[in-house]
Image (cartoon, rainbow, N blue to C red; front, top):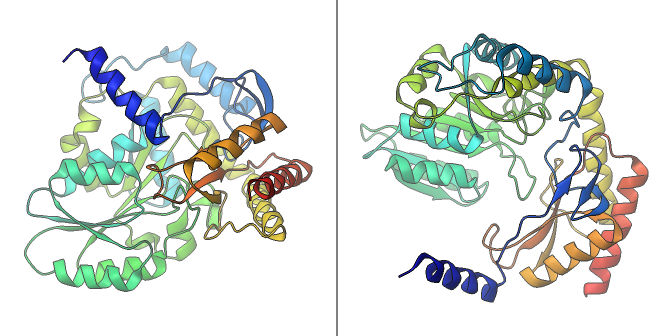
Length: 390
């Protein structure tokens, strides 16, 4: 069959199911206000949570690195791409998280698929939450380990699963998110991590939406829950709160050495570009120096949740900067998303299959630098559209 026929058939089926996607055209720096499809709107659909992506210090660091090192590392880390600034950033990240070492990856997705496959394989077991990020799911598949999925956040089910798979002379890995990217809730790590340790499982924590934002000093959900010392592999991103691009894994020197030698998504790809690395280093410094950004973000998220609840709109189970407004079906959810754009607000609709069927929602993500008036205006607009939909 011709490629055009295959593509047309698949796209037709997507349109019929109401799951066809298109990319919006965004213009301007990532900021509270941007151009979306030619219209100026308030942005509530991004992950530049601390508004560091165009911070002058971050931009200047990227510019200096471009002049000093060029715009590309020029190869993989194991050949010619291991630059001094890569090593410096990794030292800074390890110091920030209180670990022996860290290692950067091109993306969070590549970090998860590389790390999971490096730790477990055929005959081993990965235990994972039902709402785990797609990169954890695909990492499990690529590892060829047995995957055991427990209901979202269910500590009792987790313990039962760990008991069933323990003690069979095989590796067991608990791979979980810190903050769940579609619901905005935090995993009950204070209960989950001790269970993993009790039953001999390694713990991988993907804290992409907690890094720099949550817990003491912004050190993430493990720090918030008091279990940092028992996390074997802490994974985070440079492309959200730290306003750059890429990802990292923090842990022991031995873990780093293992990943350098066996993680295929690290070995067989170009190193992060120097401007990205320098930007992440600068953003980490700013985030540590300016805790008001974390505080303002938490306040804006709290104000958003409380404002919607005053209108009778639930944002459960969110306790973070990711605030879901569940509509239900795909079509009305996307209709509200489009009408909000017309009102001057971009809050992206998320549909099945990205979320379970019947739980399509607006995924609203404020920034530290949105004003209280902007938050209130968004609340009123969402409330009006939800009321009109009923």
